[in-house]
Amino acid sequence: MLEAILHTSLRMATPIVLAALGGLFTHKANVLNIALEGMMLMGAFAGVLASFATGNIFIAIIAAIFASMLFALLFNVFGITLKGNFIITGLAVNIFAAGLTSFVLQVAFGRRGVFSDPKIVGTTPVHIDFLDKIPFIGPIINDHSPMVYVSILIAIAVYFVLNHTKYGIYVRAVGENEEAAKAIGIKVNRIKYSTVYISAILCALAGVNLSLGNLTMFVENMTNGRGFIALAAIFCGRGTTLGTYVFSFLFGFADSIQLRLQNLNIPGTFVQMIPFIFIVVVLSIVGAIRMIGNLDRGIKDE
Image (cartoon, one colour):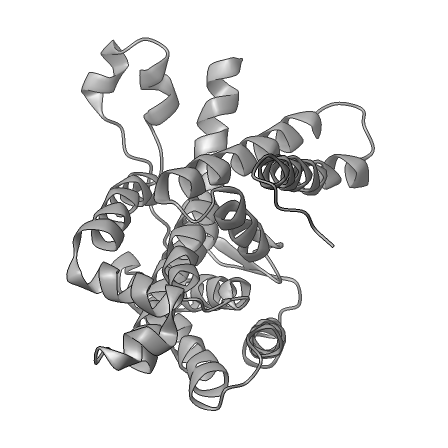
């Protein structure tokens, strides 16, 4: 039973992990990327359309990345170049993505709500033989979509890039003191642009995992707030790669519990609230711990 729940947790956490790791770059560059949700939704939608049209999963992934990066370009132009408010710009991108996917679905395919077709090709689970020999851990990490394993490799890569490369130092310098970064010749806007594009690529992979990994269909607003959950994971993980991954997994765990409880005689709307209640509780606990830490250091809020 526990193995099954943790297996599902890993699967449910993967889109959140990917989006959160992308958002971590923008977080380090002091760019509040609220648009993670919209970029993920566009990735899911474009991936399904490309898969439907070509039957090729690799073309679907490329199409998802391309679509997500177009929305990243919008965010960059209005948020960074034109100095717009990041929250308003991000919300506009999210609303635009939700409206555009619904509009295209209805006008081009005459569908509302769900787009499903036998021609849509998804990813297939990967079975690794030697994992069968590892008790408890093996069944949890075996038989997942390739994107699950890719997300683990990306987490390692993100840690390395942010902490052990010149680019990572530049990103952190821009985020910690933009004026000082400018003074030493760092192209601040170029760094910020690049972090948003990186987040768009990872959001596209998260969207593909939702629409072609867990399912082979597109459902309107199928990201269901996962972009915002990813932001919560970054906040709770204090902007570290490991912390972000751990909290993303915890939110995936709450999602898996919700799925399990749907089989019981409990009102569905209540069960669907569980992940969001869990997030509120976790955020409250993390906030309380930080406040206690500040008080111990003699810092008082007004």
